Each structure stands twice: as structure tokens, then as C-alpha cells.
Image: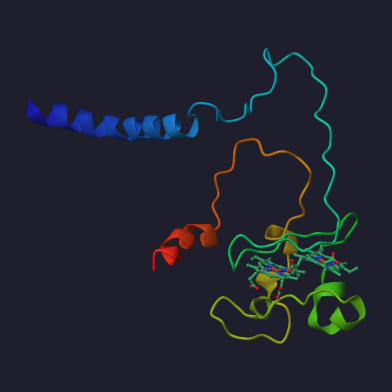
Amino acid sequence: MRRPILLSLAASLPCLFAGAIMAQVGGPGRDAPRLRGPEPFTREVPAPPMQRQITDDIRRRRNYPDQPPLIPHSIEGYALDLNANKCLSCHSRKFTEQSQAPMISVTHYQDRDGNFLGGVAPRRYACLACHVPQTTAQPLVDNLFTDMDALAEPERRSR
Ligand code: HEC
Ligand code: HEC
């Protein structure tokens, strides 16, 4: 008789956890954005306006040292396919003298085991998988990110 009760308890635990997580995400004042669109779904609403890209050429501070830096310039119309990679025409080692762009870092010339390659590693070819431009859009939910330096500051002062 005991077994089935224990089993059903164990089965309901994941739901309890999921509930607790949902409660944290959707706390007061920070409800997750609706993803379902208008209600009823047959109602047509105008598309939200396109956001303006930030193209001020000012390099953004990284939130942590190995964050892929954000792209501070326009990338409209830049080809990035099997035959052409516009990004490399400025950022590869060969072309930085002409372009005055920061060179892709040494990690982009290493394979996953850290071996150095003669050219850009295939796993770094699709730049936009990691580097993204920014827009003027407001965040959908509050961002509570705290910089590592701010976290370390009280500790440093107490020393
Ligand atoms: C015409 C030359 C040119 C092309 C093409 C180009 N970039 Fe850049 N990029 C620059 C220059 C110059 C900078 C330095 C900041 C500035 O002037 O905008 C830069 C800055 C960056 C940065 C910021 C680096 C940092 O340390 O903050 C990233 C990331 C970047 N580019 C990625 C890309 C990607 C991805 C592409 C292709 C989609 C690309 N760039 C295409 C010239 C170029
Ligand atoms: C798999 C993710 C990934 C891909 C793909 C990738 N990068 Fe990066 N990139 C990073 C990370 C992470 C950093 C910061 C740490 C480092 O230097 O390795 C970085 C750094 C950079 C920097 C700054 C270098 C410096 O020394 O300040 C530039 C410029 C850059 N990448 C351009 C590119 C371009 C252009 C491409 C495409 C040819 C590309 N990256 C592809 C992850 C990536």
C-alpha cells in the first residue's frame, strides 16, 4: 500500500518544482511578455514597428571578459554564406591594416582542442551566431544583471 503513495508523490514533485520556478519568473511587476499575440487570435493587429539599429561605432563594454563583443556598426546587406564572408574582409588578420577594424581574436584561429590553425576556424565562420548588433528596443522584462566588479566591490572594501 505504501509504494503507490510514494510513487505518486515522486511523480508530482517535478510539477511542484515547475510551479515554484514559474512563480519566481512571473513575480509581482515582472510578468513574462505575452507570446500568444492578440486574443481572440483571429483578430488582426498592426505589426509592431521595426526597431532602429544602434550604429554609433562605439565599442560596448563587455559584461564579462569572454563575452562575444556586440557589433556597434551597421551590418545591413553584408554577405555571410558559403562563398563570401563580408565580416572577414575587415576583421581578419590580413585586412585590419586597411580597415582599421579590431582583429578577430586568437581564439578564432583555434580548433576546439586549442590547436592553432592556419586560417579562421570553421566553428567561428558564422559570426552572427555569437556577435549581434543592438537596437533601441526596450527590454521586455527588467534586467537584474549585476556586473562582476560591482559584486566584488563590497568584498574589496571590507579587506
Ligand atoms: C567595412 C569594414 C567592416 C566590416 C565589413 C565589418 N566590420 Fe565589424 N568593425 C569594423 C570596425 C572599424 C570596428 C570598430 C568600431 C567601429 O568603428 O564601428 C568594428 C567593430 C566590430 C565589433 C566590436 C569589437 C569590440 O571589441 O567591441 C564586432 C563584434 C564586429 N565589428 C563584428 C562584425 C561582424 C560580425 C561583421 C559582419 C556581419 C562585421 N563586423 C563587419 C569594421 C567592419
Ligand atoms: C562561437 C562564437 C563566436 C563566433 C562564431 C565568432 N566569434 Fe568573435 N568572439 C567570440 C568571443 C567569445 C569573443 C571574446 C573572447 C575572445 O576574444 O575569444 C570574440 C571576440 C571577437 C572580436 C574582438 C577581438 C578583440 O581582441 O577585441 C572580434 C572583432 C570578433 N570576435 C569578430 C568576429 C568575426 C568577424 C567573426 C566571424 C568571422 C566572429 N567573431 C565569430 C565568439 C565568437
